[in-house]
Amino acid sequence: QRLAAELDDHYLEVEGRLAEGQAFAMAGHPARVLPLLDPDVEYLRETVGADRRGMTTTRVLTSLSFSAVSRALMGDVDHARRQMVERTAIARAGGRPFDLVFGCWTMGAIEMHAGRPDVALGHFREGLEIAALHDLQYVGAWIRAHAGRVQADLGDPDGALVTLDQSEAAARPMENALIIGWANAHRARAHVALGDPASARPRARAALSFAQANDHPLLEATSMRWLAAATDDPAAADTLLRDAVDVCDRADLALACREMEHARATLVHGRSG
Image 1 (cartoon, rainbow, N blue to C red):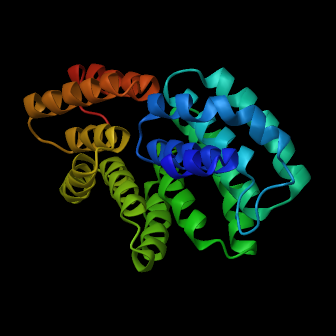
Image 2: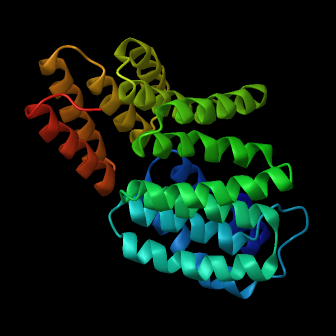
């Protein structure tokens, strides 16, 4: 941002804020995203078609994706869905593969967090089809790390583990620790659904360790949830879920907070995967 100001380069300033907002979104800090992205969205709308060369994405679509998923995580799902209607129209008109694929992930993530795994899986599968057609391995691995979660939610934990295997296999050569972290958390969820807490615990702990070391509250709370579900001690499980609620509260993760509170309520009435 300092360099952009020194050069009096407004586009570079916008790019800097977009990159910072994207980083906070990927790190599970939605409240930090919107102040960075919202002020520039009108400028980016006006520059569609005039993006600088070498970019894999249309910049306004990157902004709309990360602001939409951030809004959803903070509880404003309707606003997020409205943003994605606009984003989808622009992406389809432009026809850039990465724009289309990342839009599918964004819509899938919004619906996953909103508790509609069937709708989410449809978006994820569409994105994977486009990613395979254009050899977009990174975004394919990213989508699979989340598609595995909704497969488990929909009662297919075996299929979830296959999907998460594919995600990890693609992420490891790229050394993408964030994808692997999410795959670990969602693998724990699948093992819980299979009634295999012994396999779930090390995956949840690995994801939790990564999340805490890298200040990722959404992954931290998710990992705590599945570690709690795989823990034999009800008191320890309750502590984990209370801590998960606190993590979500501090990060303005409203939807995740409701999920953790529901998991705590379920714990009172008996263990459930």
